Image (cartoon, rainbow, N blue to C red; front, side, top):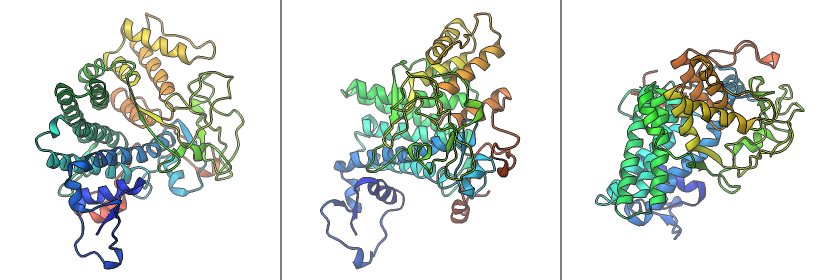
Length: 438
């Protein structure tokens, strides 16, 4: 049996091969002789390495915009006017095995499985060169961030079909291990004569992930040490196009079926980083009043000029910043705490985002005032880009600060918010994995 690997189908087919192999005895009706295909044995050919690497990156990018959107909806960034009950219940923080999919649990597990499986396959393909391969470093780095996202979004998850689920903390530990592996592989690639700029990009990508995971674990010294090594100019993005993988924010924020609105906690901030249409209106459910967001700083179409209530609309191909020197600097500022350099950094961010009159942090501010100011500036700089879910769980854990919405939903018919802060394995996982014990 031969399978086409074009477009999104390539990532799906590679995932099947990487995780399960090819079933014997394909039905003859499915046997085709197509020269633009790969057979199972071809996946051990060094020529297919770029396809394996791009399969992991493509899987991650296909998942990330959905995760960023759900992060906004389950937290205080956005409300949904989606008419589907499962999405409405996520908005209400009433999360269970039904509404953890398809946007959260399955994409994270599929991406993790692809990264783990293809890392092993890349080592088999090139046992003498894998440890200095930039492709392997890229797979390890994307796998590391996927594990960190699993720790932020999921209460627990199985990562080995022969074992029970592991906790969020264990997922962060795996993320750190994968990040360190990526750093080692990319460093060896550079030492072997590989292009330094490419190696450094993977190294900094992995350093930010390691810092992020350490911070979520409350290991601030380790987080600061990783973050301090990342240059401010570093940036990694998740890309989309109108052919294979569209950015879901475009359909959610624009048109008659729009279903995304800025929540009250992020309105009236007088900040160019959090811009939205001041004229609220209903969309998909014809009931929820939506103040549609414009592209914020992490999105490629962001514009920092123009009056309040104006901005660039989301597009289907808008890329999203997923890792950056800016994030590393925020991690360092949170991990190190109040000092002159960190106060200066936060004040610079405040002035960059202000329309008029936004205060700065005084040199004599207390630790509590410093933390509150940092949290406020961070939420503005990373608005809608997938960080908020992990941030809110960390603020509860480390500082006993809860910013999840409570009380009654702004759409009265929805009722009251629940108390969920993380997603769970789906019914399909429970049914299909005998070693997972919910």
